[in-house]
Length: 200
Image (cartoon, rainbow, N blue to C red):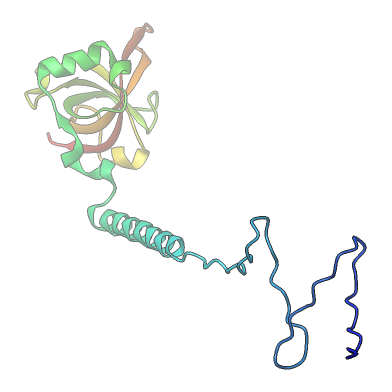
């Protein structure tokens, strides 16, 4: 019996039979999956989903900041500037005031209430400075003996004249050299007044 000749398989350059591609039902070669180094089919890469929570967290933070700013602004409208609030100034004992007078630079920025008698407020001092004998307590004017330079905006001093008894709401601002009537220089405490009430 004679057998028909079998078709020869094509050889690749190495001399071994070349594997045929699998055929799917449509009659076309089925694409092969890529093989990684381990010899197993490599899975298709999956698209990573972006995390949305950082955007929500950022938006919440911005909203919180806006709320805080709004509260501060609204609070300021009702309470007014802090330097015009008499309750924010310290009431001192004579001993505490003496410490400030002895070393004003060490207490710069401290908000205090002092009392005094205006002894010079004229063209020599100008409209934004007056000189006063001051103390920490509200007493008769004869008991005030601390020379003090008081500076501030002219509108703060609009009701003040020499010999007035005043309550001074001020911040400690260091020292200032004051020229006495006799022409001598004298270093005195300097107060920056925000409120001056004439009380006598």
